[in-house]
Length: 145
Image 1 (cartoon, rainbow, N blue to C red):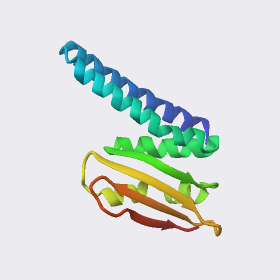
Image 2: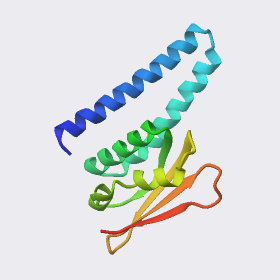
Image 3: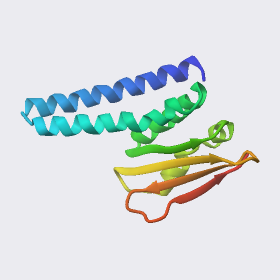
C-alpha cells in the first residue's frame, strides 16, 4: 500500500460520509425524524458489518478489503464480509478479487446486497462464496495463483 492509495481511500470514505450527512440533513429539513432514525440505524449496521475487516485481519489485508468494499459501493453494490479466512492477499490483488467475481455474480441488479466469505486452502488457493439476497445458493469462485 502506498501513500497515494491511502489518500484515495480516505477521499472515498470522506465523500461517502459527506453524502450521508446530506441525506440526514435533507430528512431533517423535511421534518422526517423517523427516516433520520432508520437511516442512522442502517449506517450503524454498516459500521458493525465492517468490524470483521479491522478486527480479524492485518492492517494491509484490512486496507485491501476496505478498498474492495468502497469500490463495490461505488458500483451500487452493498457488500459485506461474513468471513475472511485468508492470510495472504497477493492472489486476490492480482485478480482484483473478490470485487471482480461479485460484479459478475450481481450482473445488472442494482442495489444488490452481497455477503462474501473467503477461505484460503493449504495450497494457497482462495475460495470465494458470494451470497446475493434472494438467491438460494451462493456463487462459488476459486482463485488460484
